[in-house]
Image (cartoon, rainbow, N blue to C red; front, top):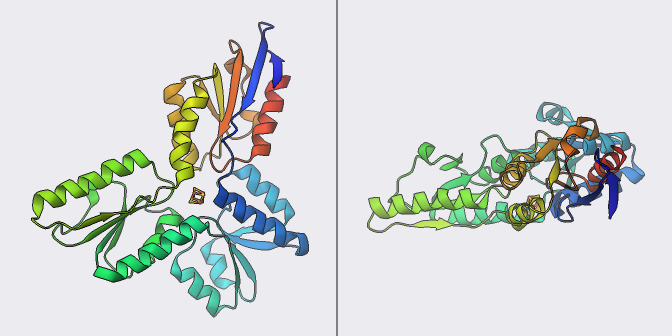
Length: 296
Ligand code: SF4
């Protein structure tokens, strides 16, 4: 355990949350990129490999080139990494037409969910609802496994359903489990109310890593006077976990890198916790810990 001095010359305990850091899916995709770049000077990746600028910069320095769809469509005879979120079916078609080798970094949990949606949606021609963010690549990839009658939303008011026909409900893996429950219970209740023979099938597809993180972070932040939450500003998981942490411990501060740390936050603290999102690298939390230990 590392101790630093705060302004009142009391020893300050600094602890990194052992449960914070990359989830399995993100680690898996990053390892694939690192392995490939040991023998090649560059590798294309479709979209940010992880929602963390510092980690993207580290990998870019190794040769990772982040591209968007407009560049991807113009590539020919190249190799492209698919990140953990997965990709819509269309991406695989373009790759095949343009002789692009894909390195499959889709998280195996997302792959399993894509397959489940594709198979179940062909069974009964159900109306498919994906509880997720409309512009999120994972949700778009999941929806692409269904040829028609699919909607992505987090808002029950936006639902357009015939409740007397089969409805299959899935969640993007990174959504909040409790909000998902509220969402699908609304659909089930509405179907029971409107139809004598309702058929609503719900899959609990929130990733266990994400679902458990909320509970873990509540426990962790409750044990510290001040918490520094490290995450990319564009990480939806990071923003969600930060809100969870702040509800339990109002002295929780969001930073994306060490230059955003403020020594005023630590003045009264005897114990500082450092935590992060499933997209926050451990090396960055260690950098934050080292910087805090130098503050006095
Ligand atoms: S959050 Fe879960 S499902 Fe999503 S990439 Fe990480 S391990 Fe895979």
